Length: 223
Image (cartoon, rainbow, N blue to C red; front, side, top):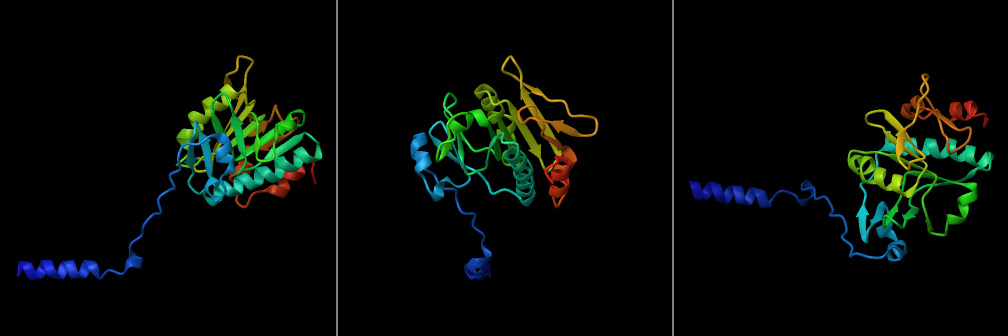
């Protein structure tokens, strides 16, 4: 009886349709390479960063992440364009931090007008003036740890950390001592950038879905 049951169990398992078995595709493993070799990659470079010769692949982002990034790109991007303040950069576009041996791709970067000569065809050759990271469960440790230290050391003047899951936004400004300090948020929940003159963001805007893009543009006197 035991042999019959084992035979039946073995047969039943082998007859499970292959479509019912979910296999997560492994992330590609690439050999160590120079920053220039990393830039030369095509499809493999999507959702990745270069860290001291190693290509680090990122997980796909959630819709809320995309919504916030699009909202900031539209509001901050138009503000910068109208006032001729510089350029906004979005991924995939690497920011080379030579001293840290990093090629990071912030969710949004601002480069001031007098530093736009650093924007080359395929990467930013130096630190941005402002870097924004929209954290996810997969990236929270990296964004709050490694990148915080790297961006501080590289001299990025403002670092915004936006956490959609916790609905928490933190704004850091680089002090005269080269260290980040948590910036002041006004009682009504407004943060005013020191790097982008005149630009402000209401923190509550970040959590509204759909994003209040038109309302924000009106408050910023762009409509």
